[in-house]
Length: 275
Image (cartoon, rainbow, N blue to C red; front, side, top):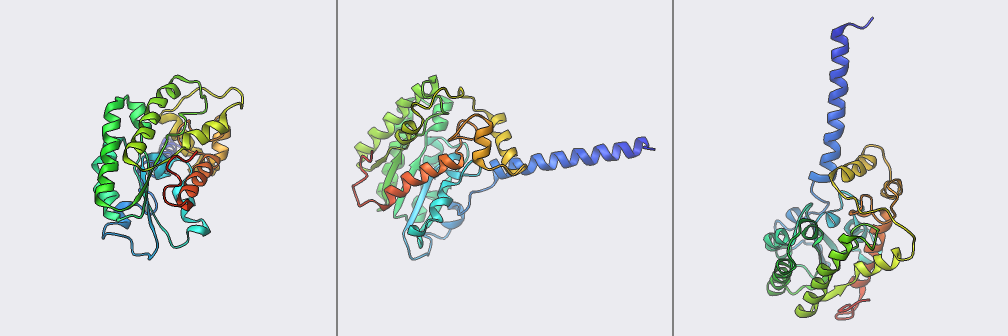
């Protein structure tokens, strides 16, 4: 027969297990550093691999701990054997945040190539377009001034899969700034949004944009705790390219990997307005 003490102990043990699992999911999805993080790989300067150094700079979509790690997928491709892929993604970053760490996480690596995918959090936080423009321009100018890297500005993928949503109408202004900045600075423009949009167009009605911490945390729980693939998580949410309307499924990650791989393999200047 159960005593009150035994019941209390059992409940306490269960609570600790639940809290432990919740903490593990939170750490893996939101708190841990990405693989080959700039802070680690470039702490002593340029990585000594003997091959080209590529820095992927951005926010959570680049960090890849919540959703597909497309930077890691590039690292694993046979054609880029010998390359050093540095992950300079940081969860929650805005363009202002990236500007604040550009010297530490990009310039310090003395890179040969740099990709910049930033602005989703500027959009979500309502950062004015002129402020975004100034930050993005300052990032590119700093990298150009302090390195000889070839730079690619990546347009932002759609915010969720409902292309006609209000947030995707707002997104157009941020992507226009990205394309204009690339032209002004004479760096490459890589049309990620255009590729995703072409894929999604004509695929029927899509779920309304519904990104938030709860959606993201539940997606992470299904992946890290229940062992679901990112594609499975996406399908369970009625999505294809995103696990939570923002972060990439395996398929979404593969599309981004392919577009960036094309840029990395292209001759100098060939991707200036890659379409």
